Amino acid sequence: MELRIFTEPQQGAGYDDLLRVARAAEAAGYGAFFRSDHYLKMGSVDGLPGPTDPWITFAGLARDTTTIRLGTLMTAATFRYPGPLAISVAQVDQMSGGRVEFGLGAGWYEEEHTAYGIPFPSVRERFDRYAEQLEIITGLWATPVGEDYTFQGDHYRLIDAPALPKPVQERVPVLIGGKGAKRTPALAAKHATEFNLPFVDVEFAAEQFARVDQACRDIGRDPAEITRSAALVAAIGRDDAEVARRAAALGRDVDELKANGLAGTPAEVVDRLGQWRERTGVSRVYLQLLDLADLDHLELAAAEIAPQLRG
Image (cartoon, rainbow, N blue to C red; front, top):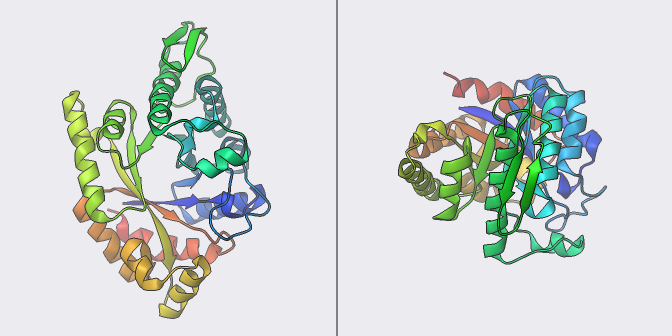
């Protein structure tokens, strides 16, 4: 099982904060540094210094890191047009030497759309647009150099797009996630290299992964081609006092975090991850780290947990 780092910079982090965490994650041996795509804080935090854009962030990290992979959980389809988004992601993939992973979601946080003047259609329309964006972005990247790409949808129309630039990677990993019972698994079966479930319980995860597997079989795709992953909030400590301190920094109860996230000593967390692996088949877990000043937290998990998950 691979551990990755997942951050929520809208809660209060600038580029230098994210760079410090990304470099620490790279030095500690994590395979990837991920971040959210939000323009508005959540909860009672002040959110200072303000929101940052993930693809501008990754353009900087592409040059300021060397090996760690970079990705989103999830880029919001409501924020961008698919053609320009495909260009941005491909450019960052070039700038990083082929280290991008692309998570795309339909968008859900209505207040941030209202705050920044972004249209927020109905659930059905958002999902329809999301489906078209997946088709367009992957289609642009897959079009051979020298050929044009045309798409006629209900919401987007591309006519003779040159489908440039190309990513460095032959296939940029595409992450899809969510709780939808029908359309989400179907889109994952068609487009995803990884299916991610954030902040759900083991039982729901097992059921949703089974739906994705069935959607793959329905179109003749091997379900094993899609990596299963989960994102879980972390509060890990060398002893109970350190666990309690980290949970308090999140404004969360230790027992609640043990039930719904990854909280406890390294031994407790390894046991919890083993339960996830046995019940759901996940091979990748994103540790949601909310206190970005606490680099010891990141380093503790790398030193005491990650080695026990290999092999």
